[in-house]
Length: 380
Image (cartoon, rainbow, N blue to C red; front, side, top):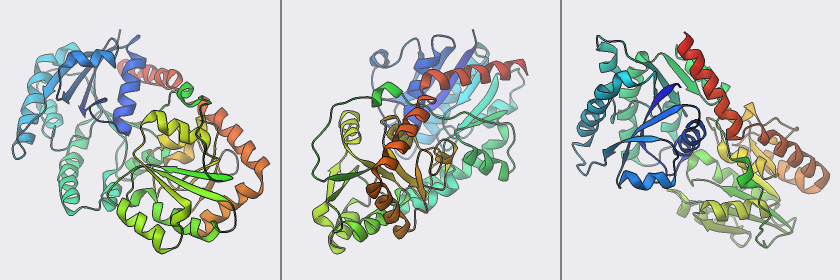
């Protein structure tokens, strides 16, 4: 049985985000056919994790409480464990960009005079693009430091995994090679619920995500202002973030406040209910490395309006299972909404095709791609 050590930072359930979601599902799906080990940071007793992960062996690193010395601590802690375990695995798969927390690890592995396992790095998003969306000056400084370390370490990996051809093209354009595209997955059955919430409009639009500039909310609000008086229509916005106050003020300024419902943070149960209950989902991100939320909306059988720029274009095709728009063009977004309102048959047909597409991205299928990939790595 192939033995793989995953190296990451915080994990689900202690941190809930796209990469944590992917690793959680991947580890659980693979653990029946791959010997999975996980080196990670968490603040609680590792025994708690058996409620979430099956057949996965953990190597815990305690969370640092030292703000100024934590990166030195993490590098020492990670390397001490890896050095002891090095000959126990066929593959070391980094699920975290080698920034400040593990900045010296790839370099030290490359300098060791022993036969070490294959080193693989998954890259979910391209940090130079992400940096343009950080609203806080301190966040920009912190992530610039992480990226300055990470880009140096990219030379020390044997192979890279990305979640879309969009990401592969970015990596190839900066000179990286040996790149494998394996899409993110979803748990298709999770989005088949019929439990609905009664919504206010005859047509209800739904957006959810972190409220910051990357997600294109300001353009969505402008687009909605063009049409909200023409139909009995409501816009539901789920999520929170650094621009929440700004967006609420903007909604009031442009006169759409009474037709926009702010839901705040939604756990998965409420997210599913609002998603199932809505008529049209709009996720106009300025870019996505992949777009798990888009795939979840498709699995729920919803007509979607999305950006035409990003990794989601691998599985979402314009006028086939989605409507794609320039995310910075409010007029184009509003016209797409009108199109789906005026032609309900088209809306239903897009939703039907979207749901069929999403079935192909269930984790039961995506995990098989990883098994095949690992087998190929070992053969070479």
